[in-house]
Amino acid sequence: MMGCMAATATGLPAQSSRAERPADGSNAMRRMKHSVSLAVALLAIVALAGCSWGGSKGSSQGLIKWSATATEVEGPGVGQRAPNFRLKTSSGAEIELASLAGRPIVVNFFATWCANCREEMATLQGASMSSAPVSVVGVDLRESASAVNQLAADAGVTYPLALDADGSVTRAYRATSLPVTYVLDGAGIVREIVRGPIDAEKLASAIAAAGTTS
Image (tube, rainbow, N blue to C red; front, side, top):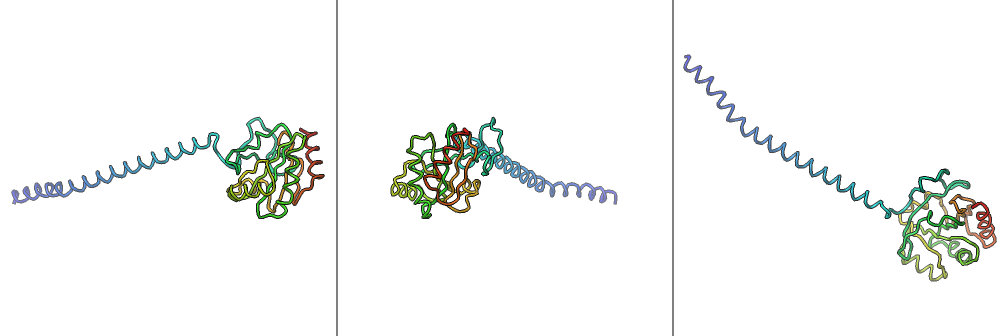
C-alpha cells in the first residue's frame, strides 16, 4: 500500500511536470512575440514622429504662427493681427504672409468660378503695379494650379496666387463668400475688410490708410 501510494505520489508530479512543459514553452513564445510586436510598434511611432517633426521645418503648409515677438491678438477682425500662412503658389513657389511685412499687404480670397473675383482682378493687378508700396497676394480656394494659371493668363495677373488646397486659410479668415479682400498694414494688422468686389478707389484708399499706420 505504501509502495502504491509512493508510486502514485511520485507519478503525479512527474505527469504534471511533463504536461506543463509545453504550456510553459508556449507562454514564453507568446510573451516573446508580444514583446517583439510592442517593440515594432514603438519604433513605428518614433519613426512617424520623426517624420512629422522633420517635415515641419520650413515646409509646413497652411496656417502657421507669427514670430514669438508678436504680441497682438491673432484673428480676422479689424485691429487684429491677420492669421499668418505659408502656401504654394500656382507657379510652384512658396509664399508666407509674414515675409511680406514692412508695407501694406492686400490679401484677396477668390476662386476661378467666381465672376466677381474675375472682374476685380484688373483692379488688384493695377494696385500691384502702382508706385504705392504694397504687396498683393491672391488666395484661391481648393483649385488646381492649372486652373488658377489659366485664369491668371486670361486676366493678365502677375501678382502671386496662392493655393489654399484644404481651405484652412480661407476658413481662418472667415471668407464664407467670395470675393473677400483684406488690407493689412506693414505689421500684419487688419485695417480694412471688403466683402464682395472692390473698386479701384476703395482699394487705393484702404492701402493709403494702411500705409499711415505701418
